[in-house]
Image 1: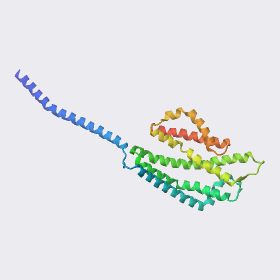
Image 2 (image 1 turned 30 degrees about the horizontal axis):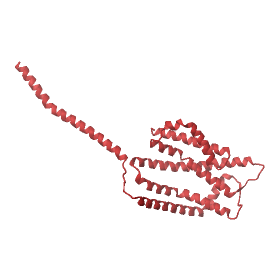
Image 3 (image 1 turned 180 degrees about the vertical axis):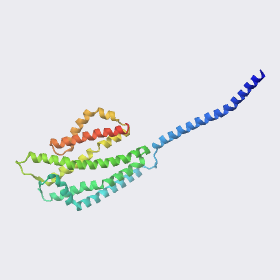
Image 4 (image 1 turned 90 degrees about the vertical axis):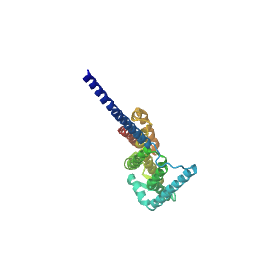
Length: 283
């Protein structure tokens, strides 16, 4: 009896001695777990912080906006002047899709005003990177870290798509529209075109196509901001087809079905391509 009682006493002492150690280890595990969760929570909160938050009054914001607009307009003015100096090569480049059609100056000074218009459009295009930089510099201080992570790919993608849109209009849309009109009147009328009307047609089609090519960027932005997801975008495909047809009719300055169909098809391809990009982001 005495030996068994001694064994029980020794076992209870060992258990009592190990109890504080286990409690301490449990407490450390809980503490480390809480520290890990708090650090992950802090990391999540950091993405929603404003890293360069500075208190500015309304007049300070207006003053900064005025300066940014002034810098952008200055860049446009320099671009227009430079493009006006080299306007003749630019005009010759834009006349290439006409494939030998004769252009007439139907009023005194018509080509001069056309040159100013071509230089203005070209100057805005040349100055657009600097204009975009001024917009980014004005917007960035009010963005969180999470929103800033979206800014670079959106700006880069938007620029690339705009250039691709210009190339698509120059290579495909403009020749298709001109060929349609030339073939329609072949053998009946001689192709003598007003240079002002021609450049109004070309410049409008170029820039409207470049803007239409921004559709995937808008979709990606809406998806990453959780405004809509890829399933919702795909669910409205019927309305998208109708909208692409309307957009093709509105954005093309000509009324020929070839140009409208090409632009509408490009818009549809861009839209469904944008859905694919949203799917790849997991939205």
